[in-house]
Image 1 (cartoon, rainbow, N blue to C red):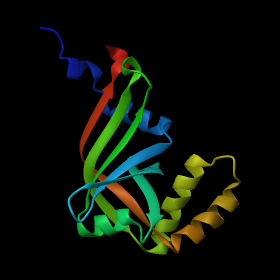
Image 2 (image 1 turned 60 degrees about the horizontal axis):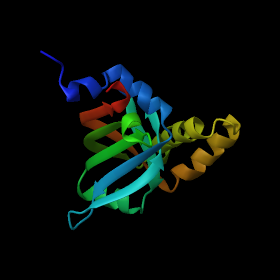
Image 3 (image 1 turned 135 degrees about the vertical axis):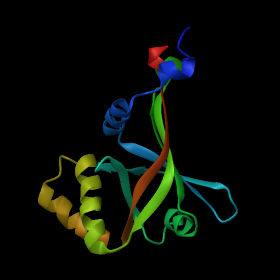
Length: 151
């Protein structure tokens, strides 16, 4: 019996992590009060194998997550069907508001996305960010992946 098309394009857990490490931006979906999806795109980092990002405490994303912690994130690439690859993670958001805990997470995001900037400057920026921002750790419940280059 031949392997299903879905099975052909699914990434292994190791391949999921490799794919995420290659990506810079992450689409983040939260639920607005009316039930519609609020989408935004953010930089992120992988900390202890989990997706982490930071954003202003007063942002719509944080307001939504305070009310309903369900979250979906998407990293994807490819411009034509035969090259489409992606990872979608559905889960729960763990909000971190304590500046002392936000600081290292913000630093991880900055270091990953701006490696050309000296570490001491990134650390100063992360400390400043931590005073106004929350960090979000995505606690995964379901991961869906695809790699159309395998077809």
